[in-house]
Image (tube, rainbow, N blue to C red; front, side, top):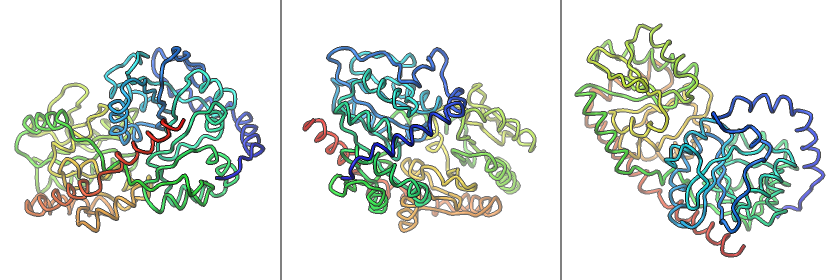
Length: 433
């Protein structure tokens, strides 16, 4: 394991203090009504005496959704522990509370609760760990905050990084900060990497080889429970027999391309319905206005509006329903891929048996894309014109839709197992603590 170099972290902390006004301004808007901003300084209610706590940190809504199988499994494996989930963003917080079925963040034993993660100032990190007193810290994917990691180490809290991933682009950025990353990783007790390539990148940054394990991606262990299927079935029945496709997790500059492709598709299939689900809630109204500007009739999920025969777009302007929307459609386009975002979770529509289309920007999911390409389970497009053409082709070819759906399901089924391997590693950390 890398030798800790606290002088590097002290330099990093000094820079944070200099940037404090900008940092605070950035997180000021990331808040929920009734939740004090002092949480960002580690000022949370102290854990009850004798309460056993597991802490899981996810950056935002996408990571919370990807961590859902782990969240459910932690509650089942350690029912006597309180599970505290932290996020950086307000949308992530809302998703945690929705998953918990507990919008008031109760701290009762055995329940899931939420706090905002503290800013990575030394004092805030120390206060947060001292008050939370977690038995185990679990960081999801690439959430490496040097002062939080050091605070865990000082308090004797083992740290696991699960579903650990580093894209080639992220790795190039972190490599410029290698001394700081090596110091941070020196406090990680176990890293569960999602692939050999991710493991190599973490090791090159300073993670100890003997504390690194390739377990696979938790994304393949996605849950498609009965409630999701019921919602999908209700939606499909209400929509009626018409061509339906979803564009999920779309971004600015991508919505326009998706809507242009849909307008072209409706020239040949005038009853085609697009379920459009923007990635970020604060853009819902802007995307609704964009639909109107492009002359596309609109119904909004949040207003309990239902699309009629002449409705072109059904705006999925709610949280946590994307998987059900995928299950209600004939085809699914996964966003963040026609703009340079890096793509989003290709496995969600595959898991519910819906053929998957994507754009070319897949840096964040290239490992998944490789597996799906090899299985013939992925349709890739370059622009609105090729998207419209592929949609038309697949709506005309039912046999190809069925083949793609089955290939996608097989990819998900064949690659499950990361969750069980991750839980085994976490159980070892708790046992030896």
